[in-house]
Length: 329
Image 1: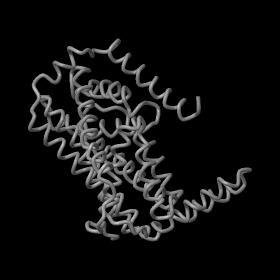
Image 2: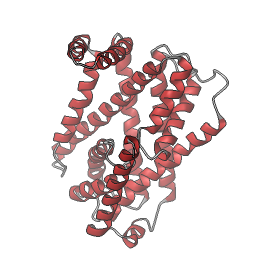
Image 3: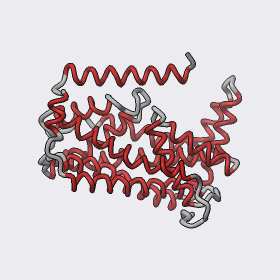
């Protein structure tokens, strides 16, 4: 068994174990789940799907904006197509990074620089994670002032330190030079060479702090829309949420997002639902584990539904015209 298959098997085992735990030891069963979705508000669920679609379009714009700023010449319309294709493969390749690999390899071959596409995609991911974490910290500050029940803020602070540290290493000339010297001393020259290539690509972004600020604002807007999708689904399942509950969800859902970004389960299956049951019930947002599981599983299904657009675009093939280019600034 090669390493890739072993990794897939381990993720599948973790997801299966967590699902078994959920049904065996928590207040979750087929009957309680059916009760949780018994009276759906289809209009609100439809709006939730539309909101997530808007966030996906904005996310495609963000990715294309970053790559066009690095000098890539592929039309913005085609970059948008590849973004949705990547979403599709993220959900149907049994892994949460497979779609990134598809779009990086495809666009990298066209542009003759896979490294440049990889670096732009990494910047897109890091800015998105920073925006998600900062959004949660801002909501946490307001919720704490209201005296609302929330988990410790430590995981959010640690996550922000990791994302910010990654950006600092790649965007700061002084810090990247220190790491370059460190890697050059290692007995594996290829590590220093690859890091040097990455730093050289990120130099294109380092010189544009105002532009980076604008991209971050867009990333923050994308994350707000994605958290709002979960909130609308909760309302769509008939949950009576107060303003305080909504504020709590703006902390809890980013925590879930950071958790399922860890490559330890199959597309977050099982991990997402167990963590949601723990966090939502403990905070008092819902009273039953099954309600939390239903909200998060439906949110995942909305993501899968929207990603099917990428499957259609993959079958259609590359865009032929240059219309719809993503602006450089």
